Image (tube, rainbow, N blue to C red; front, side):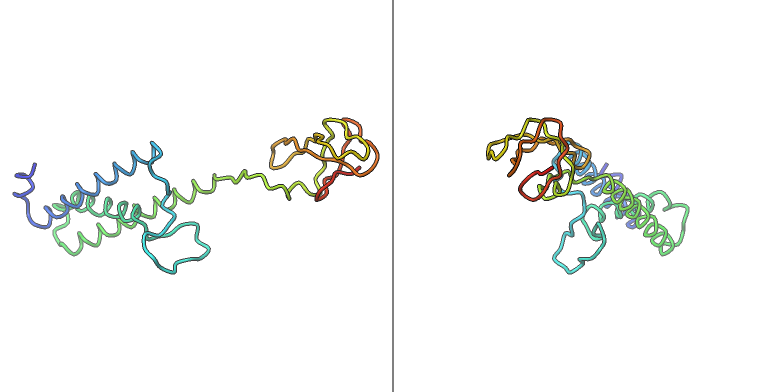
Length: 181
């Protein structure tokens, strides 16, 4: 393989070296992604800068660089003999590399739209209607059970009342610390 690469023209040889290295890195990244070794999804910047904003992603990441170089190197190899001008070849390869990178960013943004935060926040129960699951005794400060729907989930919460007993299957309104009729 090395003997073959040494026989090539210098520009084509450089494209092959870039393509081989970048492809190996891409394969490692892909394997790590499928087996959980990749803790990030390409949304953090790989350098210290002030690029904060409303964007759900960072454009300058190692993964985006690899995607750009994949498109650049392999399109350069593919079109090397069809495009005789080296400057035109570099321009076409650069544009294809940008397209590779933008397609990856588009896919990343679409996948990030599927994310859902299912963290239970106790304050979200305030003002919601709940159903008494176990009877709440009058003036009792013991543990009793309520059923309440939050974010499409039915939750069982502990509560008490500062008044009359509340029978099972009664609907109540959640306040900050208590449940009332």
